[in-house]
Length: 193
Image (cartoon, rainbow, N blue to C red; front, side, top):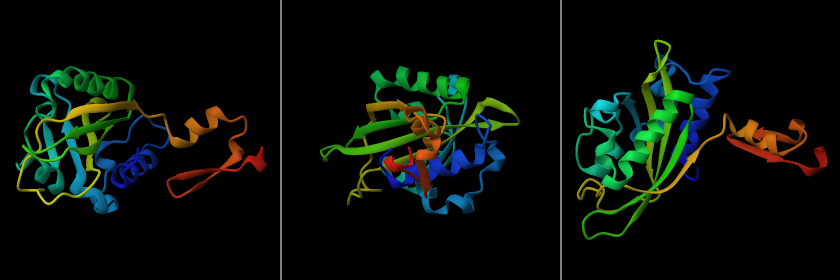
């Protein structure tokens, strides 16, 4: 992840889940993520309906110049990428697996914009095939936000995220004590090994 909203939301989600595969939907406190609410969304896990948005932040609505609540998440993606997005949603729910998707799009006649789309599974009454928390963060602000809609998103990159940044880092190092956490970062010290 490269963008601050994605990092903040992932760090919050990861802390909430603790030792669980995914936190419960009702664990999410909007006040705790108020700085990224404009980029945040919640999806319903309904493959038949294209994973409709249940909650959508104002900046995400502005990117597409429409109210997305009730609309299918799949409708935001280019036709040739919808099958891959369906697989991401399936894998996220099946394995309580978080994903980050690098995407690109532009308004009609405008310059391309990079975006980071985060998909984080949520439990809803214990079931993982019910909800997903996410974030759609643009890499830059643009004067056309809210005036010109983005065309369908194209996948630029796709990555399954590890169980947590600490475990991914520790698996590559011999000693977990070789790093310390500083905010959302893990600082490695070669002298600790």
